[in-house]
Amino acid sequence: MSSRSFLEYRAMFALDDRDLDGVSLDCAGGASGFVAEAGAMGVRALAADPLYAHGAAVLAERLSGDLEQGNAMISANADRFVWGWYGSAERRREMRLRARSAFVADIHRRPGAYLAARLPHLPLADGSVDLVLCSHLLFTWADRLDQEWHRAAIMEMSRVSRREVRIFPLVRMGDGEPVPFLDALRADLRAEGLRCAVREVPYEFQRGARHMLTVAKRH
Ligand SMILES: C[S@@+](CC[C@H](N)C(=O)[O-])C[C@H]1O[C@@H](n2cnc3c(N)ncnc32)[C@H](O)[C@@H]1O
Image 1 (cartoon, rainbow, N blue to C red):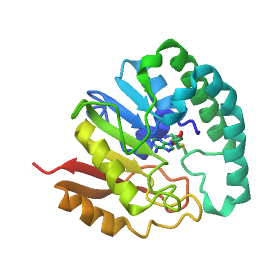
Image 2 (image 1 turned 180 degrees about the horizontal axis):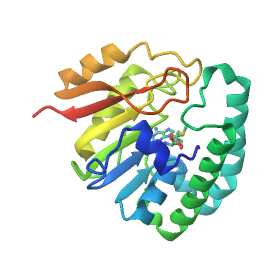
Image 3 (image 1 turned 30 degrees about the vertical axis):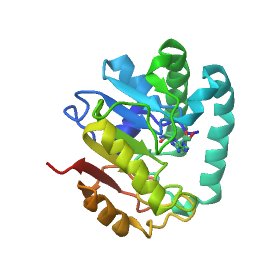
Image 4 (image 1 turned 90 degrees about the vertical axis):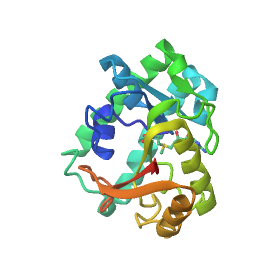
């Protein structure tokens, strides 16, 4: 369970103020600094993640181990990461710690903003949010989650979104390589009446991971 900040989401998903006008869903949210910091700024956002079923106290306990585990994985694979966006490992760590604290405080204060849910099913009505943001679940874990699971997960996120689904990154965590089934998946989604595009974003941490997938209904 990682914790990314509002600033990281802004860059990873190339978000501008218009994108954030309306309700955004962070799916899978993890320790969503994005939702917590958005809430403090008056930007409307919700998160969904199966781990929220454990409750705020258990999650807060679990989080420090997860941050250290992520840092150890990055150190062991240093050649696969670039630091231009963060500036330094220390700045990244500070950003993550701030995001984590904001999440822990916010899930205690506003538990209703954090929905226990597991893709490919979301407990939300059709078109109940404007934008869905999906960071570091789809594609990231494509060695465990196959093309059919990705199709079903994207269909479900599109069902609940009025405007668009944005997914970042498009490479696998294990080896940093592009997902081999991306083109076939895009063809599946087109056949379901969805419009997909790959867009460059102003963020890079995994070397070469500078693109998001956008998915919207064809009108
Ligand atoms: C690497 S974390 C990313 C969290 C956050 N989006 C971020 O960028 O920091 C992956 C998250 O996906 C959640 N997850 C795993 N399987 C899921 C599923 N089927 N549906 C929704 N979330 C899932 C995990 O609980 C975990 O919090």
